Image (cartoon, rainbow, N blue to C red; front, side, top):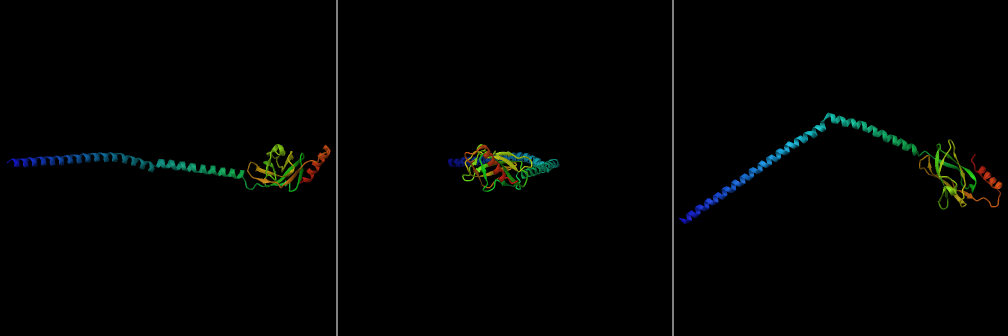
Length: 221
């Protein structure tokens, strides 16, 4: 009889454990289902509101009208500004601007201390130019003090001449380089000419005569 009691108790214990396990799992599943339902309910309550606001913003006639009006007003303004800038740039850097020297010409001779008229022909009126005397051999630019030629020059109205008193430089071959005309960076140069020293031992009158004769023979008019 003792073994029957043992078997009975074993069945009771096994049945109780099985029932408790089943009950625990069921409770866990129910709790998880409740949590999931609560979470998705919260998401759904937030997302439709956000989606509705976005939809209203994108389809609102007032906002669309404001955006369209702003675009219509801004684009012509930008276009006008770009057109004005392009026009100004074209006017300042016109490629039609040309200048060619009529003096000095190739093989012309000038003397240190004499005054000459640099002259040119141009496609438009020259109001200002930047000029430099350049050694034709070394390509070295002579400064305004040594050359007697100012870098920046204002040209008189309707004039095509610039007065130049030849400075104290080494005798040799030179040319005049122009790097800026009327505020535009346009480079041009004269022909190569010769700068010579005054003969030694001559009087003031003879010096003036040489300057006058050379100036008269080199002027294009």
